[in-house]
Picture 1 (cartoon, rainbow, N blue to C red):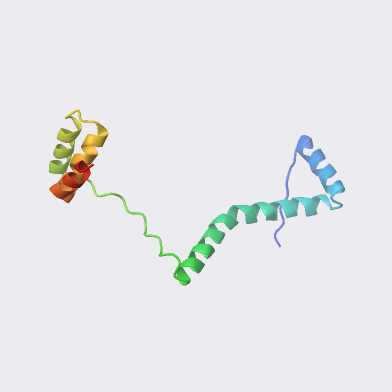
Picture 2 (cartoon, rainbow, N blue to C red; picture 1 turned 45 degrees about the vertical axis):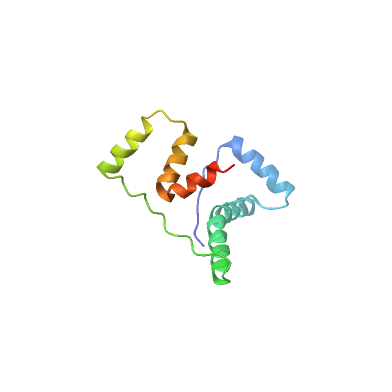
Length: 115
């Protein structure tokens, strides 16, 4: 075990001494217990999450999460096309419908207009 020497101001030391007496511990024991708890608390969430994810992946209930990938930058042509669409002054819903129609074809538009 390593040794650590602390200089603790009286306004912090006195409450710690009272707490140690109430818990029937020495001041050293109290501080060591608190440091252990702090180390476990800060380390546990990541460790626990990884263990849970590994267990779920191992049992087939979860697919491994993909590594974070940055979106690919738009080409100049795509950027220009997007700028033109956004500057037309359509409402968001009109813009979304036009985008869907463009991707899915006219049949999507016909399906929406039936009602």
